[in-house]
Length: 352
Image (cartoon, rainbow, N blue to C red; front, side, top):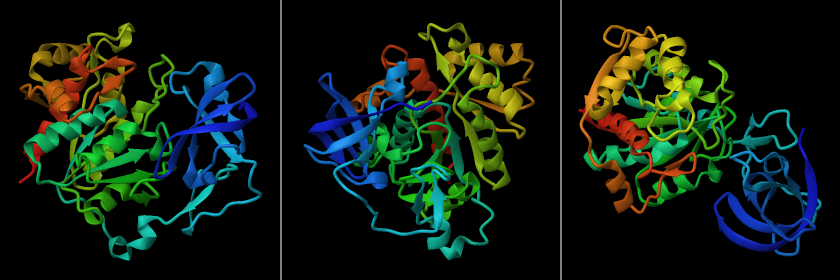
């Protein structure tokens, strides 16, 4: 159950659209917290606030910051824009958004994305490698990120998305389902893909959850299993489905070394369609063996595509991006990012 505490804002550490990072004194000195200003408005030094401390109290990897729940310095607050689609429905923070579906009636009858490549990634941290690889090959093409509601719901919390937008490595964002705060809001994943194509004018799309994926150590109990339905949705809409693999040589957990069981389960159990799997050339034999061991016929069930390395760690560094996953910098476990880059290469080559 959630835990709330009241404290005093002592400093504003950083701010950007929809997000403030602040220090809050909860009685034992300053502690970091963030404010989702789209939901509760901004705070100022000296304001007394209520914060949700649950994730930090539990020591969760995604919980390094408290979340400001309300600013006691004000009696009320209302955002500027009104819409009739609710996100975070039936919670105390439910918020109305102006969905792209209501803003763009021209997409009312759209039922296809017309052969658009859609890269589906299991981890938010792979977003940088996919974007950099794609833009390295097709700097002229429009690349859009669709964030699902499988993990973080506010897109504002992602430092990575912010950095990619600043560097023009992503051209637009769409938040689908209960996720919110993108350039375009979508009610469903299918609609998000259509909005990316027909409103944001995407040549290609990356679909991935936000930061903070959840796993339980069980076969089916992990948030990344949603990738199967995303790949199937892409096929249903006439797109080109491209799966990025979760690979690792440094993860201490056996189930995630080599080809993660998350990728194997997603492609074996959760994906009904035939999709393209981007495979780094150096990992080809390992990937084929892992899929064969799982009784997944890689030659018949899916299309395996070997991809030569493009030096993705160096390319990300050249862009000033310091990508990491599970606390490990890209240079420590480069194969994870090479797998993501391979998918970006496949998408770039799929364009006319």
